[in-house]
Amino acid sequence: MNRPGSRSTSYDAVWTIPNAISMARIALIVVFAWLIITERDGWAIAALAAAGVSDFLDGFLARRWNQVTALGKILDPAADRLLTIAVVLALAWRDIVPWWLVFVLLTRDAVVGIALLIGRSRGASAPQVTFIGKLATALLYVFLPLSYLAYDRWDPVHVLAIVGATVTSALYWAAGLRYVREILAPQPRGADA
Image (cartoon, rainbow, N blue to C red):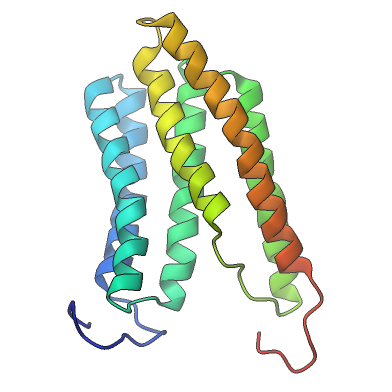
């Protein structure tokens, strides 16, 4: 494993610091789900905050330390999707967010997932994560926990959080549709899969 300041890491490397951070974020998903189901709200928010920070940190460090890897390009978006799914399902289960918002967000992930399966069968590579995609994910990480914190405490803030998550879901869909177009675009002859 390359250390900070080293020239670069093999694209096929597994054990890098950014990949370890992504793996930790996936573990935090299980922790968050258990904490919210058992109604340990303070600890659940702490786990969610740690997951949000790790989302920024893994990508930043991978670029800064030249540790971008094939595994990292799979782990980071997979962790994002899994965390989004866990958060919206847990919050809907607790009646904090409406079930229609869950449907909107999970349908987007399903559409992108199906496109990825089709694209892989055609030899397409995974799409590059876009600024809009990262922004939408980051905003969901703000508005969904805010809805959680404000529920049954500050009704205007809770409404603002739901409206913010709804508007953000449009950005989330825009990024998802761009990924779908990129995945399903015809591949040039002789392009590497």
